[in-house]
Image (tube, rainbow, N blue to C red; front, side, top):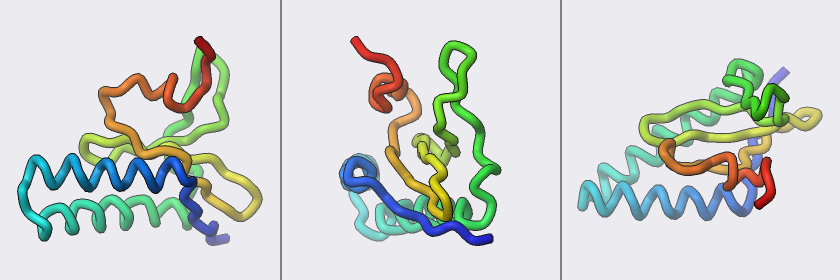
Length: 105
């Protein structure tokens, strides 16, 4: 069964931020475009094998999130019926647990 990929509004904003960060580092539209395309292609593979990502646990409990790592970024997603819902695309060294709102302050 092939799952449909959907991006949340937050994930789309994250992709805009990734674009800006990669462009700032590379100063090249071509390099940045290729990076984003590679990231999206890598994410698209979750449509066929969505459970192949790692399960995200917090304090020994499964959070409902799966994740995959693409270079410096972590792509967090959930499964819902026939959809793979991409919730966030975050820098790997960020406090992603707080960004995912798994814990409250």
